[in-house]
Length: 477
Image (tube, rainbow, N blue to C red; front, side, top):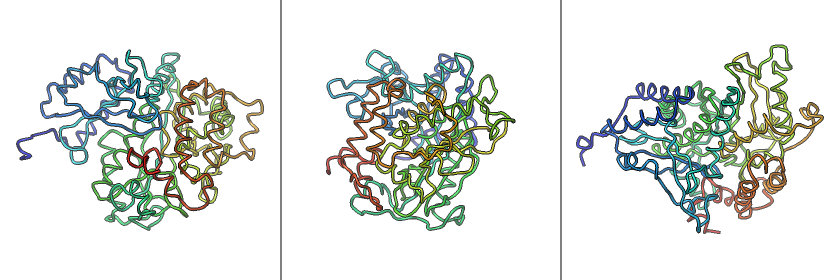
């Protein structure tokens, strides 16, 4: 069919950026939901060149799922969208499969037509029970609700910014073919900051960064990372629930752009033996009525007592949180001190082996950096757990001494599952049912992988990774 006959919506990048930044400002400004819903519905009704709306949600393990709804159907049925939750790992059992999908009209994105196809809009959804209440395993709703509670209490805002590393490998769908080939092929063997302007890695980074800017990420810098074919694109901090959505979009954008170049963007924590793995350093701060509560010009490392209490609570529960931040067998390959890995439960301004680092900052940028988190973590669950723990978690009586003690994160997923499952604090923060369900999922994957990891990456830890496996691969055991 002729493209002229279709005439679907295509918006220039500069205009896309304006639209997406305006929508983001409404969200951050907490414009009333009814106002935003009416505005978005009117736009979808009036804009005849839109054919479909992509509604996204995230499962308990952190994998992004997408459903495309015909625009007219969605407008007529937005309050009655359903899907089969029993087909999603960690969601409903077969006997209670139906779940609802509510539209989060604030989380609305215009998409670049050359990357996602013309005539499409993307919006995030809230997973709901049959009666319309929030589904307990939807950690996005949990993080959003917690953020709203803090704001309603005293205008407290939790901010986050992530530094997400990934690899670019030759060939499409390289991760799912790894069990056949046993290896990944680099597109570039350059090093840190080094990549010629026209090579495949730089072309990928440039394109992905352009899409991020167009979608309102407020980019800051991008570059190749230390390992061959490794990349990182940084963007500005924002409110925590928005930041978590942007993590999912970052990975989606990278995977889509990579596919168009006949390559694969991989966010496995340690896909290749002998080189650095992928991290997702997560910068956190808390403000109240516009004031950064982490800043104190006269405090230790220019951090306030409030901030140090936040750090102390994270260190107190560091080993219990490890499974949420390092959620796969492959994650524990990355926690290797020979490759700049943060495997020590301590805080430091300079030691990059620390779970928590204190970056140089000022009144605006004072923050802490959680370095032990991998890019395959469920961003909503991880950020929720970090914020909840930092603000409300237990604090050891000798908490200050913990910052420099020789304590280490678990070096395998079995120990991490045991620490997580035994945590009375996390059972309260997340609920016993979520703790049990999550631990069960992690154990199911772990038991399909070698218990003794050794030094080489094994095929099973790729094949049964939650972002890679599917019905076909899961049955190849």
